[in-house]
Image 1 (cartoon, rainbow, N blue to C red):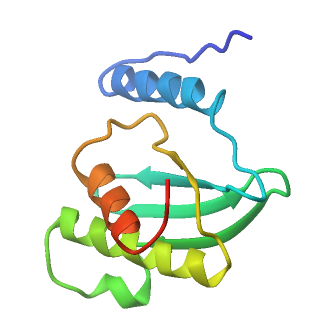
Image 2 (image 1 turned 135 degrees about the horizontal axis):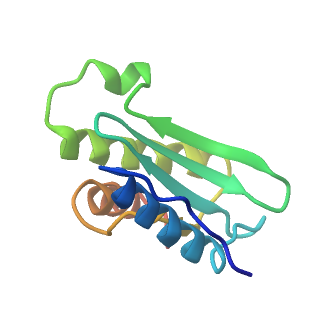
Amino acid sequence: MSVSVKIGKGNAYKNAARKRRAIRVRKRVTGTEVRPRLVVTRSNRHMVAQVIDDAKGHTLASASTLDVSIRGTEGDKTELAKKVGSLVAERAKAAGVETVVFDRAGNRYAGRIAALADAAREAGLDF
């Protein structure tokens, strides 16, 4: 299966490379009913984390920096990512999820992505 990503000018090279990495990761990472997928979406300003059951196509739990409980808090983007990680772990545990598969969506496992994952692990989510 070959997938092509159109490359343009400027930041498009970086975005195209991230999309290629995301496609490569998604070929191997799928969420099941027993072990759903924790996918992280990162923009320059916000973070979104969702626990998804790919077999049914349902989102079991989600959290983001746009949530009311996180939106007005102080701290840099890494601190907000930690709060999102702990919040999505709490919501996933409330939905009955104990273990997940981590999908970093082509982003490097560093900085805010790693902070979110570490906070989710500390809150009791296994992956």
